[in-house]
Length: 285
Image (tube, rainbow, N blue to C red; front, top):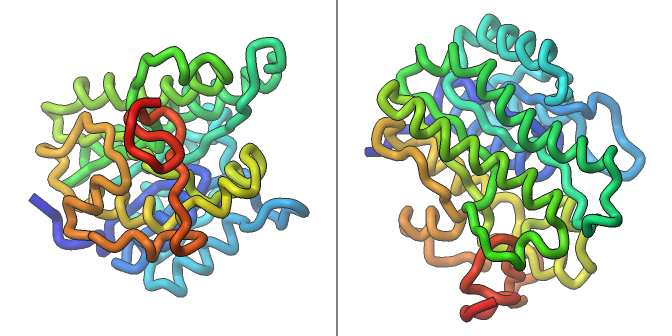
């Protein structure tokens, strides 16, 4: 069953100052949702676009209501305060999108303790603590959802070989999905993961992959449209899933994916953690 839109529902999004988080915020805002825009970026960055205040303005221009909150998801007290502020401001929290993430695709000898701690602090600890802080409000909502931007759990050694620390950190988010979906199923809170079939043109892809991969990526809008479709589903009937963006949209009747291409006509580059594909070609990796 699909819920008819997100009007007046409150969506708390981490890492919402740019990229996929921003795209999800704007897609939900077009329904008239209340968007809690959280991220660390409150002032313009010399290399990275977007601040929470810029996105908040875009949300309101798109038809939603916005609350911008500066938030480091490694700070337990700040997370609890942000959830309380959001719930007070909008009268509750209906949806949590755990989008904030840190990445470094380096091997064991090249990964510093500082970077290891950052990835685990943001990806695993941040997802767990944001979920923990929002759940008391979600449990009071009519159709509550937690959506983690995390991959399907895939134990093939190829996904650990070149960047074990990053893989463990992302899979920690996926394990939050697995565990919390089972824990809160009977209480009506949906907990799911969403992952892209292809690389998405974000600052993270630009910084960690060659330019040709960025050109073969898709726009963040595909993840936003897939997230929107998931968040409208009945929370009691759609939980514990590891969704892939393209598959979700095909279920919704979408057949033209060229509209999402950074470079129309280019073969899309398949993202990490997905077996069965190799650089856009079906087959074993």
